[in-house]
Image (cartoon, rainbow, N blue to C red):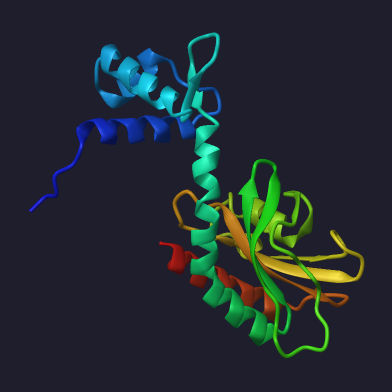
Length: 214
């Protein structure tokens, strides 16, 4: 038996998804065409979403995602963190290095979950909330690599040294196949280089995190 659903709510969510997929916003006419409904319905949907700050309209009348979506997004991080922790904990213990899950935040990489190994004499301090440009560091560069084809061997993992902290090396792999999530799983350690084997272990951890988030 098919569950009873709300057609209006479904259309409102479809509006948000359509707006999230464009950088330039959409007009009422464009939304009407994509949704297959008349303009009056679109106007009502946009007016309701605007009241909740989920949608805004610019001077040209194009609708865009509103800042209210950011407030909702902040509540996602704790859920993502909880799902990723088992795989991160196993990765940190296996390698003896600080493991982390990093997500995109605008043009930056933001660490949302960090696990330090329990048995090492020393390790790199890497805190939740740490952010850096996507173009620097293994975590950010792995996220950028994840925007390419998944079967490209050069995009499976990224190894770096000294890009964010002198003497520290990193390995990270993109989290693939999770709708609405763009991120990477990685480790950071005090060493001159990171082996290919560690890179491959990080790839397995990224797959475990992706599975936990699906």
